[in-house]
Image (cartoon, rainbow, N blue to C red; front, side, top):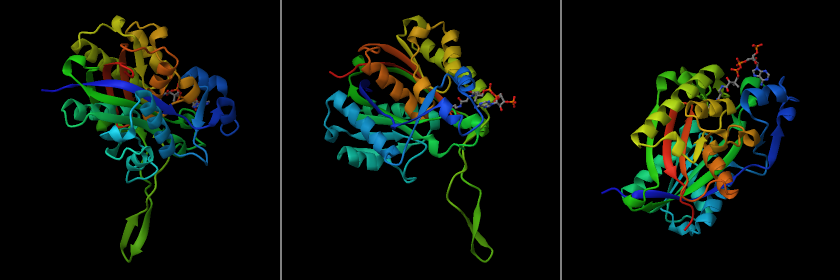
Length: 333
Ligand code: COA
């Protein structure tokens, strides 16, 4: 018999360096008006010399543990959703150790901008099947390391950040995660990539090896835009239908923060008023796996999201990958 899951706390952390649109225009041929009108983004945060992705992840995780009033030792699981770890072998164990979550198993999960949603669903399976009781899901990315800062078509879009949520197993009758769908389509993956570099170095005579390292992000913006405005409403619609939930009964729409025009298009499709659409991408840009928990934490902290609120969330991005979840914000007991 499967149990349920509740989302009891959130936390977030962002780098101290803030880069405005005007400041980016000192580097590439762009301007505040273009960026704001096409994306809704005004500024983004960039990890500086005294910060790290692991450090931000630890801060976000700690904040969620504080809100939950949990000892780190009580965690069974830490999942770090990231495509930009400090260590390609995985950064989650380091985060686990910094948190002092000594009893937890920790691993990275890579699904680009859908990573947080994929990690939330992955963690919830361990809790629902009864093998674990408490989990921390962190979404964190540092795309500032992987954009080409001379490519105005991509560098204006992304920023760095981390967000976390604390999840607890509960009875089926108190289920807080009401439904989900996850999807990938590798056939369409060529429109958004962070490929391994192609350079081969000689090893011995007639043998070579591929050098480690990655090429900057490559994106076909229009294809990605079309993908998002087509697939996100579709997946949300089928999720709401299968849960017999009308869009009007949602308290919040919490989408991956990629572009305000995408948020507006999805909201319009469901006739959801702007006042119910959570958006903070003006301040942070697209922080990839971090956007959803970063936004959720902001809205919890400022009192917009209240215990019992019903939230429809959708993540989407490279892969291509996308997903949706319908959940209630429980908050700490
Ligand atoms: N500043 C000024 N001009 C820019 C610019 C910038 N930062 N970036 C592109 N341009 C120019 C282009 O060079 C082009 O000029 P041209 O017509 O002279 O060649 C013009 O603006 C239009 O470019 P285009 O790429 O067609 O713009 P667009 O309307 O598609 O908007 C995006 C570009 C990136 C904002 C939009 O495609 C988008 O949001 N896509 C989704 C991206 C995304 O969310 N990715 C992450 C998903 S997880």
